[in-house]
Length: 94
Image: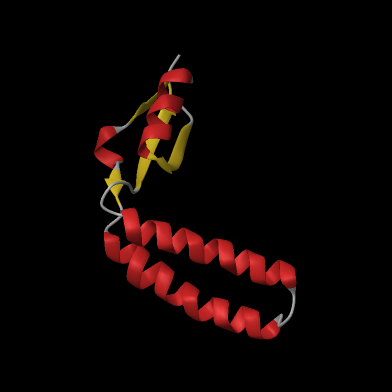
């Protein structure tokens, strides 16, 4: 039996599941707590972005890359109560 670790936004995941004959193994699904994103992802990312921009000062592509990451963080902070990420262990059904 093949087993996949799936990391998707919940609504997209459910559509994919129904279209691909995949089922979850319910004992193994979980939602990441908010601190995983705020304290352990976005806070360190902000520090890394500053170092990255210092290293590539004046590089338009580097600036646009960081701008997109910052926009992602803004969207998360503005709408985190309405969406999130869920991890599932799933298997293909015959």
